[in-house]
Image (cartoon, rainbow, N blue to C red; front, side, top):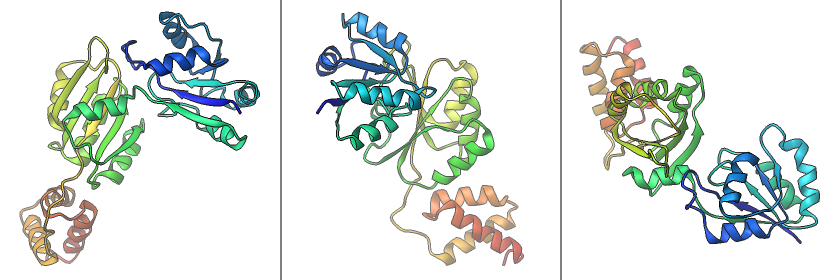
Length: 279
């Protein structure tokens, strides 16, 4: 039975494509491409003349039947604009339908912007969580960040140049300005850049340098400590902070960074003490 190949393509530098990917793109009967114009440039560069058909978020439902009909006759390749198909790109529904029809689905590994940014970030790579694009509106973005703020894993996000500075402001507000952060820009392209440091340092950099290009944000996970503070120790620190006039949110953020407790847990204890008069 014919095979659906998920072919990874360059994210910038056209040399970043595997020999296997080139062979598959030459041998399949049809290539389903997110942007046929962009894919055509790649194919022309390597003198590949396989027919193309568009497959993107706006036509994927009506294209599915046609692609399955083509797949019933011969091998088909799926490519995205750049990088690995299905990573923030359409294709999951087609893969599911192809598998349901009994077809073989095979990845042809290659470039991936999130992984490229991660391995060059200088941050831990043993465990990480990829979350794609952050929400566009600040309130939703902060809620999404809050949901992962206490996780120990390295976090990976995508962001646009238009929203980068507001996203960094929300990262500072939710994670704290000293959270480790690497901002990767224009990966594998002529103006590739890595800004490594903290959220505050990234804010300062992009306040002076207008954001341009495509961005990947790699954020250090919440720190974990070998010994978690006891409830009595935490409550004493909360009481001291309240007496000093710290706001509940700032106090919870500060103590979560050193106590081994989750910020949400510290915040609940701060509010409980505040309601009881700080006792």
